[in-house]
Every structure is written in C-alpha cells, then in structure tokens.
Image (tube, rainbow, N blue to C red; front, side, top):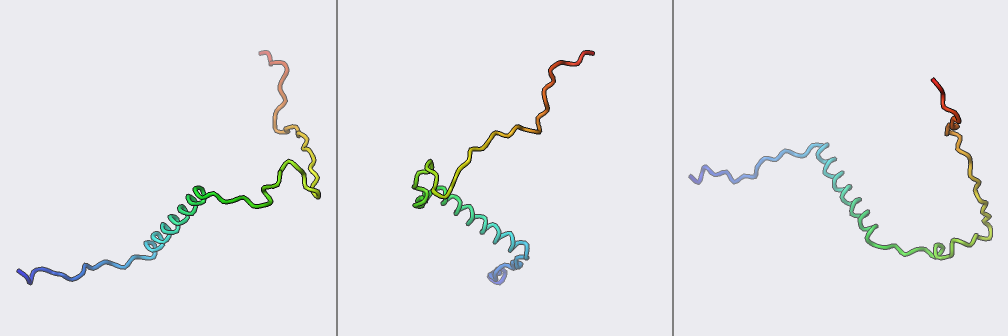
Length: 84
C-alpha cells in the first residue's frame, strides 16, 4: 500500500508568453490603480507661485477680454410657417 502513493510534485506546464504578458500586465495595472488612489487620498501642497492672487494680472501679461463670437452653425429661424 505504501508503494501506491506517489509523493512526487505534480507536473505543471510552464506558462506561455501570453500568460506571462497577462500576469505582468495585471500587476502593472494594479500598481497604476494604487498610485491613482494614493494621489487622490494624499494632498499635495500647492507651489509658491499658485499662492499669489490670480485676480491680479502679472506685469508682463496683458489680458484682453474675449468678444462673444456669433455661432455660425445655427440655422436662422424662419419667421413665417409654410402654408400647405
């Protein structure tokens, strides 16, 4: 009865190229997701330039107000309905 038991390790085929690609791709995707979640959770201090008041224009920067451009892709409305 003791001779019937086989204690050798089972034969496992080596993973193919696509299986390896899938495995490492999943690892990279998980690492990317962890980085994205940590970027949302951990606040990043703002830089010194962002602390200046944005309402004041810089000395070398001149802002021009934008004029509202008429929309050219709208059809003109018909004033009178067609009679049949």
